[in-house]
Length: 121
Image 1 (cartoon, helix red, strand yellow):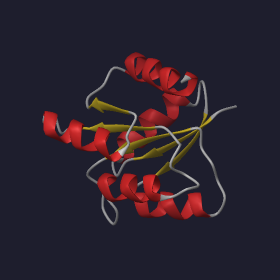
Image 2: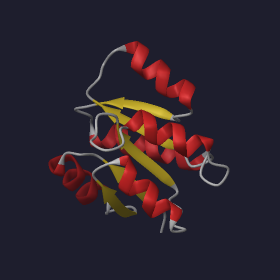
Image 3: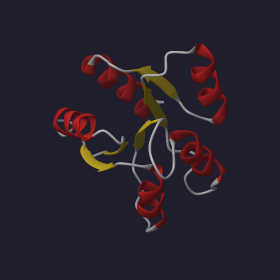
C-alpha cells in the first residue's frame, strides 16, 4: 500500500485527510515540518507528501526547501495545501519543487485525482 505523509497544524484537517485518504493509502500525520523531517531522517520514505504552508516550528517553505535540498528525499512528490490564494505563493512553491498546489477548502475528490496523477508520473 502506498504511503502518504500529511503535514498540517490543524488537527481537524489532519483528521479529515487521515479518514479520507486511509481508504486508499497508509497515512502518517504530523503537525509541522520539523517532526516530519525527523521521521524521514529515521529512514521512512513516503510515496507522496501533502503539506500545509503555515505551521509552527518549521513551516511549509522551510520544509520543502530542506526536502528538495536532500539527495535522498528530493524526488518525493509534494502537494501543498494552503488557504493562501495568492498566485505568487503558488508560483513560489512550484519553483521550490512542489509538484502541485491546492487551495483550502478543497474538494476531497479533486485531491484524490491530484494525488493519483502525482503517483503515476
